[in-house]
Length: 326
Ligand SMILES: Nc1nc2c(ncn2[C@@H]2O[C@H](COP(=O)(O)OP(=O)(O)OP(=O)(O)O)[C@@H](O)[C@H]2O)c(=O)[nH]1
Ligand SMILES: [Mg+2]
Image (cartoon, rainbow, N blue to C red; front, side, top):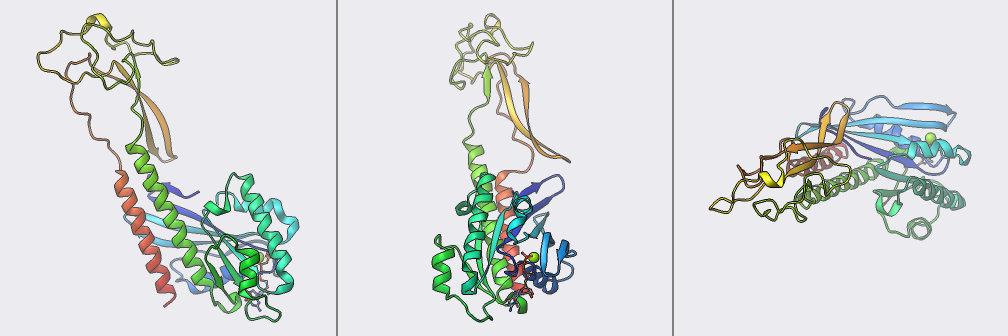
């Protein structure tokens, strides 16, 4: 899951290279590490290898720089392709924001490719994820070798959902950056969509839970105490000591004013060094009809700015990879 940490001003995206053993996943990361500017990548860390075989995972951090004040990072992982390391594969896959499936293009590797793809879908399912809803691209690697399956054959067997695919010779670097560039764009686009959805969800968010006000909260409460007793309408929520009792409401003013609800539970999110967490706040309000004023504007970063920031990050990522590709 993309992590946006406003306290630390960071956006972190996780990308996983998946595929059968020896298809070229580690080689992809080696090429990215070798060709990306040294200032943008950290060390390529391979946790436990045996010859060419990854036994746990490879990890490469890629820093896209600062956009709109947010440091944007990709954390790129490979899984071990060998069938018997499935629990490790599953662990590495957890929280992936985007997946590259590196297939071996040789015809006699087709079954291994299909089996690995099935395994990917199954592992995702166990996390409640769906490949069709996850940014996903295919890389048909080892196009320099003998006994190749045709692209049509590979497409038919491995890509019925028609996601973007790339032919590659990872060993010489061919196709490595186009693959990563496309997936990155898809991940950032997905992040953009999510932030837009979250923003519009907030705009349409239901009114705060109201205690002691008539159903449909915005309707003015008749002066003189038609509102039900405070604390009576929401189980588990107590009205604050200062909430007005029906009998104490002031006489109706000559000009209609919008009455404030008797008491409100306000749901908010707070950002701290530990991240974003929801809280509920009990807001004390004045007696119905008295001293109503327009609610204060919410503090914090407006969602439109966040959406704009994310769009800017997408643009930067495009420019960054375009630069790498010359
Ligand atoms: N001829 C050729 N060899 C390749 C290509 N890509 C990778 N290789 C070679 O294939 C072998 C396996 O590559 P890796 O990148 O280690 O494969 P992997 O997918 O990480 O394998 P596991 O870690 O076992 O899952 C290495 O010897 C690579 O040099 C390619 O495009 N063409
Ligand atoms: Mg490997």
